[in-house]
Image (tube, rainbow, N blue to C red; front, side):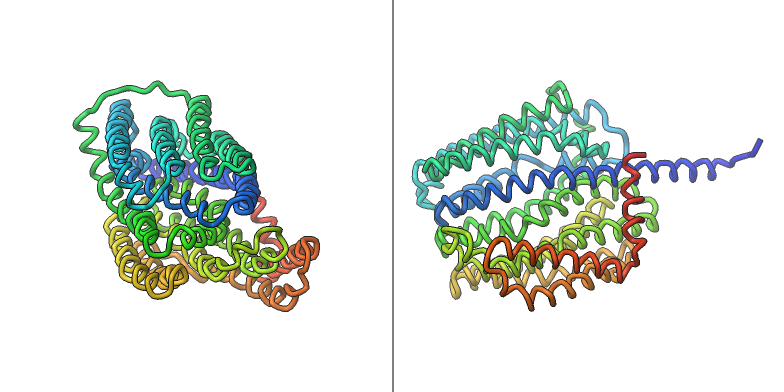
Length: 495
């Protein structure tokens, strides 16, 4: 019988834990991407339909009201949910009870503020009564969403994201079906009101079916104190993000109007679509994964390189393709020529999304490994740049000035790479070599042949060929075995 020292026992234990985390992470990422592809197809069709039925000004009102509620929603949390996911020790019933109770108190206080402040919001942004009903509906939806926080946290912490898919699919179906139906019937902004309420109710019911949990009321001092050590700094970063994005949207409405805001919302919505498919899922999974691997820097660096490489391979070709196909599609799709002024913003937001695919993952790494202060410094930089450049450029150039500011802020994301590499020594060459090579050859082909796309059928053919060129370049750079290795790697989810 072999004698195993305590150190060797600990190493074996850590290796087993690493393999389990790896298995669950891969299964979760692939499960999320595979299943949420259906969600994004639904969202894609719905957004296309809505932007045909609705004018830019109506779309701008929805964008504005969403930003107002998102800004207020920040105050409904003090980082306890993220603290539960990041916590190294086992979660106790006291932790769950404390988190749930504190959040409900904050949400109810927020709703009271929202309804009391509604007359001011109405006059300040010149929102009509239908817009106010949308505001109230989003407030109610926020409360419904807070009730499902604990089940969602537990599934995320256990890296069982596959179970989160059903509620997401049902929420997406209910929101988009109701929104499109009532927009088609000519309800305008009210279509979003009904859609928001439907999404909130369906999401709450389906979440408790997937993960039954009996809410418990109670606040425990030691538990609250422990969770706040991580939660408050984390929430400070969140506040800066909210201030940078939704806070600025509220200011911009008075400068560029709801029509200009509609152009910005349209451009950012389409440019962010690839990130919603890939990055959101990867970020959701990588946060608990990185947190579990933070004790082993070598394996953590490998995990970062793998996750970022596959994310870039998935997101970059879609972003590049979107940039090339946007102009011909605007001319081909009926009633879509009204979005032609949003084309330049679309190109700039695509550039922003390419940077965001990297910087968001790396800030997620910093948060997961406990370097909250570093993330806070980054958020201070981005918030400062946003508030220094965006209003000035918006006043000078209108809605186009907003996108010029976006380009400046996106470029500053290079700082994130240097900051993250101070703590974990990953290789950007390993991450970007293949994705950049593949999109380069794909872009050359599209530059030469995109002018031949004069119909949906011809554009589809060009898209298929460009995709084949992208895949072929990957095979040349990585070797044919890359695809079999990828399949073998992702096959872990079935083991």
